[in-house]
Image (cartoon, helix red, strand yellow):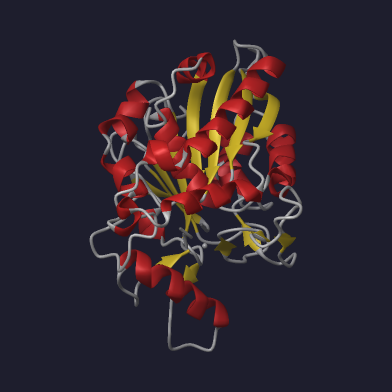
Length: 336
């Protein structure tokens, strides 16, 4: 069930309610310079009206834990100047929760790649609702919520917002009204026919094919969607770069080819974007260091079941990911 790195160029496909200050033609997608977009945002005059009160719920990647995202959420809360981020939470998932997927392994639905989202991911949806309940309790029911999903967390969040959880709780009903945006970071949104194997065993296919989870349906409900993906790392078999070889082993099963495939080292760029009207933000490099943007900043430790909430292993400081300085500024304004 394991899922397999934006540079200076950002491709923005504006959705409903795109920022008025965006340099992108709202009628058609076009390529814009990420550095210029960041500079334009910083130079934009600030208004005098009160800022919108917001909360952020982060849906973690597989086997990642809340402590892995402390720095990211602190940065969002301190540096986002367009809105007032009054509360943040990570869906409270210790890595031990992922063991619950194992109960689907011996089933016919698993073998046939026909797993049910509602049945397989109920524990993840429960954690999302716990996080949302805490946000509403802390910030009040009048605040708006941005859901940020990292890796698998992006398509689980999409499924929840589209109603595939089957939830009918008061928290779910309130979330349907108060969630104003969804930002996905390195999330595979499709499982193409060319894929050598369906690593999600039918889950992603169910979400991608559900009309209620489509970009248009969510936008019609007032949820602005921004998909952030990296094109920083090529996947190659014949190379002296170990990272390119590792990337190739991730890309090949997901898209069924190599050669021209780029991504964040785990998720190919082509799979990281939803259809219009969702925005597509493609990043290649960090604007501060010039380093390629990779899938994650930590190495999950699924073997550490004794302390399921202990942070994952941190990668070296020169590893840049979606939440690093020089990268986060290229998508932060879409937490709206």
